[in-house]
Length: 389
Ligand SMILES: Cc1cc2nc3c(=O)[nH]c(=O)nc-3n(C[C@H](O)[C@H](O)[C@H](O)COP(=O)(O)OP(=O)(O)OC[C@H]3O[C@@H](n4cnc5c(N)ncnc54)[C@H](O)[C@@H]3O)c2cc1C
View 1 (tube, rainbow, N blue to C red):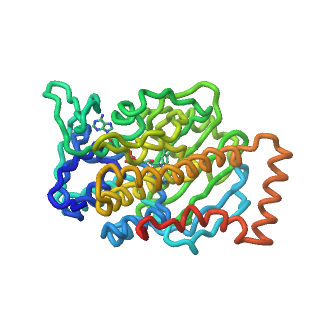
View 2 (view 1 turned 180 degrees about the vertical axis):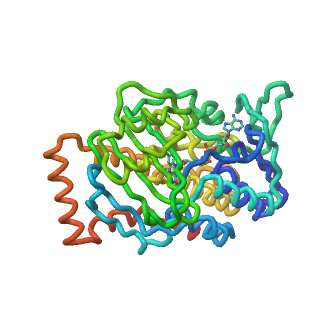
């Protein structure tokens, strides 16, 4: 289809929405982004963008800008919680560049990229619902007349209005995990640019540096029966964070002593959507497939979706064929990643000390005897290049 001048509305100015906006505007579409926040901004936290996400930024012409705002990482180091001793080093550099980035910086680059491509923004507009009774989706905004749209991409995250219209409201399942996150100023270069995963009984903590090594991103995950609210902007108590991870030794303990501000939220499991599209309306990003954070892939999946969707629309004769192809391509990959992320939590949280000791010794031995064995298991994930379709 020729996308030149085609009116496309995107709901949500997160990673998926902004990337889709630029990808479509670069193909000549007339793109408008609707966002409920009064400005395009993001919470203070870190993201790891693996090569499968990086290739999309590159194809969007934002590779250089991304390199400038992110810190290159060689991969991940699994560590024991008690003293921080290395259990297994996953040197992932052979798959390409892993970038550690502040979310706000990535959103900034994507927004600027979208604006430069001619995308318009309607900020401070909350869409209460989406209706799909005709060929043109209709959005409802409080205090305004319903608006018919030629084409809608809903990249509106966890509580997507289009997903509700396609499949009804779903009830997510509490996973029994609560997550804590904090940012900490650190002395430049004092923490190696890798994802350090400290594995303890029933909990783990991930730490990696951002912004040229001057800021440390901390995410702690605890198994807990009582749930906290979903969504990651709920303020927590730093002392409780410290108490939960008080059995963790150096260096985690020292970091936690300095935490002054912490967010806490419950992790919920949502199934990957079964219906990704209706007449002239389609889901992208977390709206289609929220994932647990244990594989650091949610934003990367959103980047992949954005590219594939724009490519599908540009290369098929009809919208219906494009959207069917898009779902066929994306749903199996999203399901595989969501499942892999879910099982990672179990591996990190071995509770019984003897089992943990055996498992960690086994991992150390595998790492020494055959370092590529563990790393090659991730080839399907990181070498996937959606820009090669
Ligand atoms: C602790 C944690 C760590 C993570 N780490 C990583 C990582 O290292 N690497 C990685 O790739 N991913 C990571 N993720 C996942 C990643 O953050 C998300 O998957 C990704 O940000 C989702 O992007 P999105 O654009 O689909 O949705 P969102 O970022 O949720 O954006 C949706 C946008 O839509 C707007 N919106 C929603 N509803 C409406 C409405 N009704 N009207 C108007 N606007 C609306 C919202 O305000 C928002 O701006 C992590 C997630 C967590 C929780």
